[in-house]
Length: 269
Image (cartoon, rainbow, N blue to C red; front, top):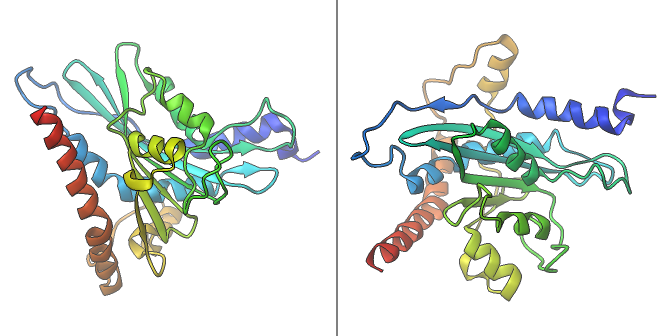
């Protein structure tokens, strides 16, 4: 029997591969009570879009499904204890190696939530700042919605509603097709509106004509990994600069504007 033919071994090996993508928790210094939160969540969530999309795309390569339906996820997680903060990137993938074996049916988003709980100290609270999901597209099994990217399924959406879940109303959720040419961004409210009321107004959808170079792992990264040294080049290529400009204009700026408008509305209530 092949090692991966054993379902348990299959899960363990893929989990080990996913953990190699995770980063360590990085703690910020102690802050005085009268100082603002060290990382504004709106800005942090926007800044995390590119690394989480890349991370989710890499995690998807590790996913394992008996029907070759692969989903990868990545998240920027913030842990808080009083005025001490820590941040970490974690990754997850769907794993269902055997048809009909419901005991092993791991969703990519569930991997993320489990890691948040494992990494969280008993005295810490965990919040997911940005959650990215990259997966094969199919109609939503619970709502029947045909979406342009794969959204968290009904099982995951139900778990998101748990008050103890680190996905909260401020979490930015970003989903993309495997080619990373279609990207959607929304919060829990937008996800609810679409799948409960067929209202797409809370979903920002952007489509690109070609895979953006800024969302691909560059050659220098892969070559550096093989040598054990990862160092970026001194200059971006003109193509990368053009892609970044288009990405910022079509996705980042509208998203940032809408999120700041929501915050302003809440501040005046």
